[in-house]
Image (cartoon, rainbow, N blue to C red; front, side, top):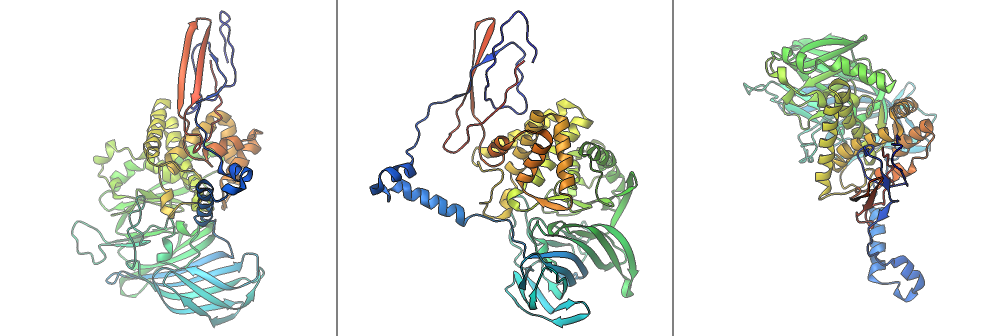
Length: 562
């Protein structure tokens, strides 16, 4: 802090809400943090202890009700009874009936405790055969099915030393009981047939998937939870005139009778079930490259020149993100696919992001396109979300806050600080607009549906909080902590405390105060400022927090004055 020798500067610790670091370009003094006087509600627990006769008071019963509701509404991280090691799918499609004909083989091992029952998510299936296999022995397995999950009675009690395989022949019906989706994801079919009979002149025939949060179990049986990761081999049977793109690498193409073809897509690195994806269509492909990593931009034929312009910054983005994170892009390739009628803006499936049709532009239309923000967002997910994944939807901001913040980081690098600050202001306005009617913890286990987590808290507030943390710790410590976090939890899943511990490990600072108030509590500071200029040598700044302290924390807000 610089100080003018002509003026006396007195600084006391002051708690103040700022986006990053609040700078006052004058000598200043500040009073220690003040709190607006409020009436404090009677503490019913203390009252009960002091007055046993009031144990049944309305206030005390309200406390009991709230605590019971908190227990009842708690969405725990899914328990891991098994570890799915590998999934192999062989899929063909009935375009007329909009059905998926599948064969699935899952390699599985009990997670820790001995167990003899396996439950898989499989929504709206018909099963034609279910088999258990271990070593060279294969046998049918008894099961029950309720339309949502299949419960398999394993032939004996298995331990964590027993790796086995489950094979399932099935038909999946994505159109059945699809539901209305949510505000963030407008439908929940998991797999979508677009103009399946190729009868609409202005719409091409396509199939594509969208698995987040737990919609991929509409087209393959799995443990549909983010804390379950596996490798996969996906075999897709399609007309020889169409193109497929999926996770991992295309390792083989096999010609079949009747003008059909089978494509083999192999994913050798583990990822979560919701990130499994493919798209089939009459796509044109633009090829690019980043340091030996092949890149593909898939779009309807005739729009390749537009795609080349829309996605042109992808190689530079990958290089920039790899540099600042200190972790090279971790996957064997990266494809970006533009489809029709997508149910969200875009989805960060591992190695193959799928985008809404607004990115389908002609060469002329693409000249002034401004889609860098969504391209950066989905790309950054390849590290935060795919490489390191939230273990539960309650911790969704560990995926989405980083992807949101990547938009700021790219603007800062490519277009300058002013553009980046405008982006940050816009994101904060998104959050404040939502906060008018909704204030919830950033990390929250009491959501009604997992899709409820896809809000401006998880995205916009989360991104702004990461920026505050960068400004508090400094860029060097911030990025070094992200490197440690990514490398420590590579191909694994995390909760918010893993992130805190990474920042503490690198910075040497206890950051419970920061994570408790910003990630684990709700609301935001509401500040009142008073500035006293009566003494020209000592400018007195008084700051008080005026938020409702019965619902919102008293924030610790370090202040830098210069």
